[in-house]
Length: 232
Image (cartoon, rainbow, N blue to C red; front, side, top):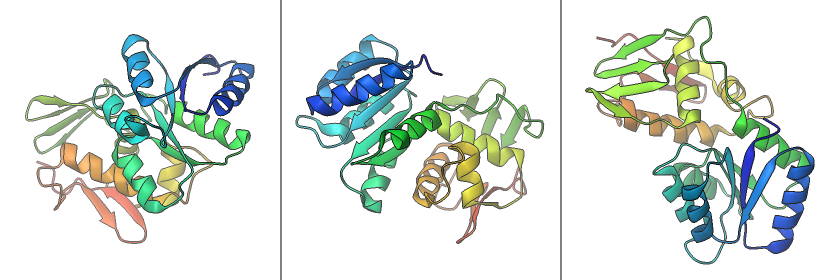
């Protein structure tokens, strides 16, 4: 997606200029915003394929902007932050981010993260069922649609890709690294906290009792599986 439309949100003019020049040189269509408020306005007015969102900004800040964007949009969001703690990463992912990049970063690293965020798996793999019933949850993989008790539930693209990969390998524990590389890309493998957050979000959306899941199961220290044993 070299012609993808990207919104850069950062309060530092020099960072915006450098990132914009680099991305435009790679064929991306780039807009910029200086604050979370301006970013929200632009996302409401235009369609973007990706948002690069600095977390440390005056005003509403990147975290709140991320939550606000995610409340009404499935657009991929990559958080940029000077903080590198797992707590900060988990908070950002919980707010709806797809990825988290720590400053200072190299441009090749950022470009790789952008490609991963824009990456979309093929619609269906040979092993993916077109329809899957998990109790009150019905998943239409062909239409990328999920309903619970007849009510449509919105999944982010990464949540859907993760669920689809697990459904393609039912009742099999998929190791963390394999899941990360299948859904995020080959440059990933150690970001176990990503999986923890995304699995928890999926459980809240498709499990009757997210704290005692019947389908999205954890194998401690190993990985996750979609169990069809309890399917009705």
